[in-house]
Length: 112
Length: 113
Image (tube, rainbow over all chains, first blue to last red; front, top):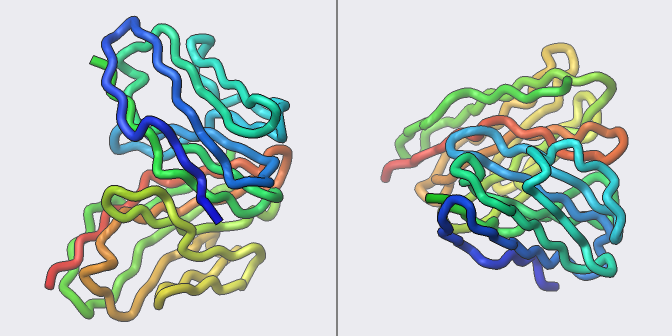
């Protein structure tokens, strides 16, 4: 069974540009989460989808971040326009039920 | 709100040494507790979990016991190996609404041969 995949693995963009991160969850997992780890700090929750519906987006930093989950399958996280403080590692996780989450390898975003 | 506090790293040990990484939590209700590990260049992997008080999670020689009275979930291993070098994250699941995870800051472990 394939695990959670994320693309790209690393993205370097300039301040003001737009970046879109993609997450493909494990097939059949209805729950999809996005998290972010800023350098040296804790991993923080961004938002949670159940199928295509946003259940909780309380962790989204501001309206420059937009997440979607098309048809309840893969998800994208767009940052527009990117700022320096958006740099970090963005993790996606999926879960078939509420307890155990399976994480992807993360996307390292560097905004210069 | 709920929170997780982990001991600061990095932790450097010699091979076969005993490992303890402290983790304490603050939560309303009865969270589930987890340890995740991130090896160099890889994603987060579940190491072990415990869902209720006094449960002991174990995997690959690592153990942690859910202590409600001390709100702790310390990670231990009796004899570490070089291959255990990684970053370890303690986390809780808030058991309500979204069951999102709340993580500690992570502890980097380096094991020397």
